Length: 505
Image (cartoon, rainbow, N blue to C red; front, side, top):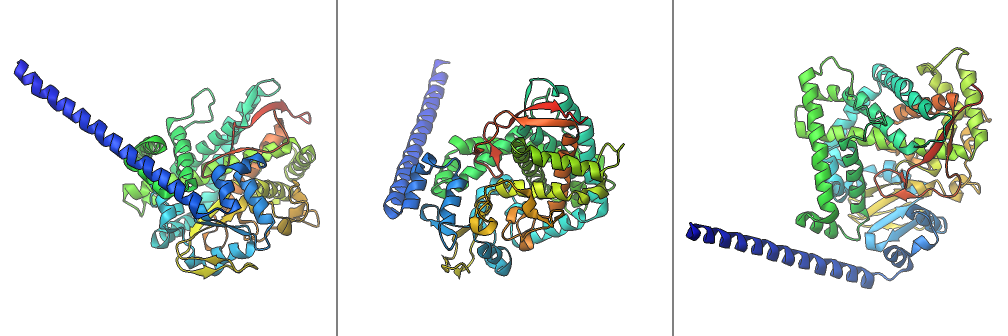
């Protein structure tokens, strides 16, 4: 017996020793590679901008990275900078944005480097692909989202979520000293809503007595860590960490595995229940797509599009309203004017009559866009139409910075930092859209956001309904919002508020 155990112990010892030796070698290689990469960057570029980025010395003066970018871009005639260590050209010039998104669209796809960064999370979803895959999904989504039946279905989902969950939740804390994280509430609300609209399933996240679903937590983590890949000084850093399955890449892998479990379950449930007679978007896609991996990517893209962006926009808006009671009053006056006296909820056809509310929402997103920047990769050498004729090399990453564009004096005037909804109103009464290339919150050109009208409808319904009943005040008003890294704008620490009954009731 002893003779049989000893060889087994020896085998285990050798195996463990081999594993530890391999790990030590791999970690050493990774450390050396990281050192060489950083050394290379420091010696390769010594310009002030790259030095400031690498040392994070911009933090001494600016609250967020986007504020530093806006400062740099405002002070250049071309409104375009190059961050050499990131191989990234960043612009806030509307002419360049129109050139990228419309005039020379084919030369600025999402590109393989970007698709690789988000590939583990988004796969072949519409936000991560070009060419035929993108065209197919866009055509399908365009046909569905443009139909009156799907818009009516979406409106009823929003109405029910507000009426039966959001308002009762706010009522439960109304008039008390209890603080509520409004960002968390809006993320739960929009997650419930997008799941019902997209999949016909209700996760019930807005019940605050329940913990945020395991899936929602994993989705938050996955989007955050995927965004951090794009901020790395070199893609080799996160690729090596992924190869070794260590650090943030290990956390990302686990989070995506959790996401995949739920996505597969959503698809399985839809097949089990049957999808031919259902109105949700996934059912309509399943009528023409039979590949579960592809459907999984579509599921994740729906959630990314409809959850975080709406929650982000609503969070920033209510933070701004705390410091602008005059704007809040005008929204209430408009709501009373549009709705009948005994009416409890906006009707679908009344939404477009809310001109001032449209101006408020657009002005809020000018200052705090839900997606702060978007990147493309040049297919061929090119020259931007800005006054400096910025050269763009083949495979260069080019980024139009939406957050910075909302802070450009030459675009919005000397009052660019003021929250001023009136700038969107013609003759002070009629809402007028501005050029999507100076206000690319919903992108522009061929890739303009298909869900724009549905998202605006959802936000208008939420704002009007809350202000009909409540005064919502941020605990800390004024100053600057701080943001966490992510694919969408997330306020660091949430938005603690106190909810009071509106005295006009």
